[in-house]
Image 1: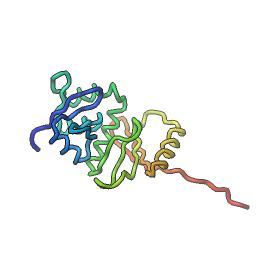
Image 2: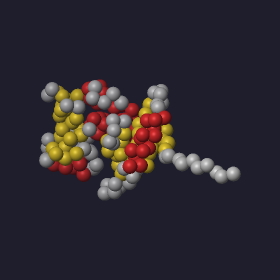
Image 3: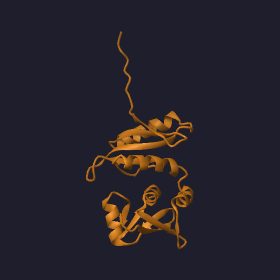
Image 4: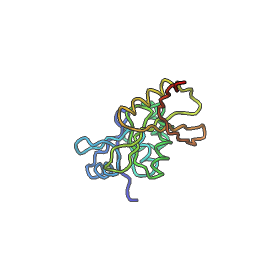
Length: 173
């Protein structure tokens, strides 16, 4: 696998300053390039640290994955469940990026193709309003995406549901 890439924690994100490393990770579907630097969202950084591909420095010291997760949860309280889904989808060979809302991910068909799904991540034990689900479906529809609902239970097991809006019509008598 080679030597882990180095990043530094800045305002809830991880910055990779080495241009070659930044371009390599970006080419693999991670982060956003800003000049020669790569900016990783929390879920991407935790995933790369977990897999030994990235070492993150905070206040000059390298932080372990569990500590990084704790630090980044201050910026995103749902990071653990989002990481669980992100990890699961990446493990299945999917290309996944952080989504347009805090509890969402985008899942792509291929590197050069637009995303097909918005994956909304929810905890099994947290009550969800039906209006939120309708709002998610409507937003995905406006973006020409299909919706997957990823429900994470207390053990970290994930169940995926494909969700869509149905139109009920009255049948004439």
